[in-house]
Image (cartoon, rainbow, N blue to C red; front, side):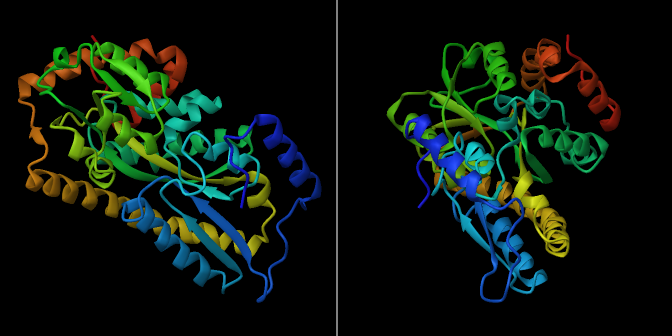
Length: 345
């Protein structure tokens, strides 16, 4: 069992130093009796689309490597919470993650927070031009500076807003404590709406909503359903204002230390899993909305064209406000690649 990252940092770093001092720089050559074990940790529920995508990857990876690799899956924050797992990967306690791309901002790679800008993508077609194009590849390459390898993007979906009161327009967010993940862009987004952003781990969101520590949140329908947030949120508005996605990543030293043929087989498994992961995410978001509506626990509001224009008018100025943080050139590259530049005034 790995030591918890919540222990005093000195103990953790001492442990890490010991591990790194005794670990080989390359993964041990696998044999039939001793396959390479890859611990793949994530925070999604076992039934969630990310978990099913990870299962798909596991099956392909073990098949393509002829059993020379064993993938161990740890969903639902079994090993680490989302704010701890990146450090665990850098220290070698796990070998693969699929964190939200927003997590790389606090790590020091602020450019990834461009994905958090509200209304920067007008749907999945525009999104794919980035995640499957040069901009997405250039962003993944930045992870090498933190000794990480970026392997692929997996979608979750587009986010909606929820609370225990109707959210018909930006003024309805005024003064509400809104749970967010750690992202300066998302924080600026909530301030722009007059909300009070509260950074909390994904695994803590339900309890915070249930107990009234926070009033509302933003998330995809799939996350809202799988984490049962709809049971403690009486209203939601289908703003689809922001994107939530993941980057499948590994520890650079571990990944580059793998035998070349095994690394190529794993890359093939990731490449073939990615479209499956994205299809599962799209289908699950649709199913989640249907199930939550049928439950009657949450009232879902579809904004009118005038209401949507009001949401956009309140949120698009965040592009200019955060340009200095994520990079104005990067924002302009996304505008050019997607074929449109949203009005920010």
